[in-house]
Amino acid sequence: MQIKKQNTSIIVDDNAMRIYLASPAKEGQYPGILFYSDIYQLGIPITRLADHLAGYGYVVAVPEIYHRLLPIGTIIEPNDLGRIQGNEAARKTALSEFDQDANALINFLSQQENVISDKIGTMGFCIGGHLAFRAAFNPEIKAAVCVYPTGIHNGKLGREKADSLAKMSEIIGQILLIFGTEDPHIPEEGRQLIIESLTQANVSHQVITYKANHTFMRDDGYRFDPVATDLAWGEITNFLKSVL
Image 1 (cartoon, one colour):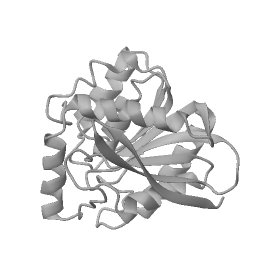
Image 2: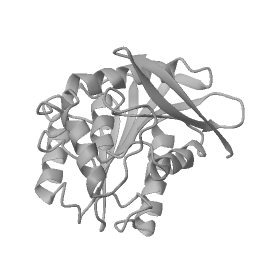
Image 3: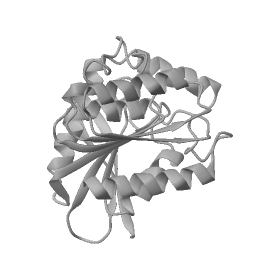
């Protein structure tokens, strides 16, 4: 399916939040996806992933997660300095601010003319996987895809310790978790803690693991795994189609 792309913005906390919007070119109504980047914001590897998903028939909204701290359009380079910059911006962002952004973005998506307002999902990578997980606390989220989501198991997200494990019972949608077994940021015990917590909270969830490293779907780095990425896309698109 061919897509169209544009940049827009909304105001949250008196700050303009840039949103990269990818959607099917054909007129009609489609499910909406709140799509979160990793710590590097909206570089080409992330917008390429968003474009890919839009081609399956979704309106995909990708926000700049550090809009309170960095100038509009800031793309953080995926190198040692960029890693410091991205992690520092995450450290300075309050958990309540991340949650406020999610609710504002869900409201934005539901009001788009080409979005089916009762079919809203979310997806994210790394820190964005955790943000997608927390976005699912909003009852309007029917499906959440969390790809190697960091910080859920140990509470690392923003300025405060994240209460994501404790709040799992608030999720009423369905969750798809995708992990790499060679990911040092989410060890086996962390993955098991998340899975056990979801089970105890009676949250509908699926878990898929690949013999891959962290950020294996990001195609500009040494950890990129094209085979695992293709397999993951198959699972992601099937999951979203079945729920939305």
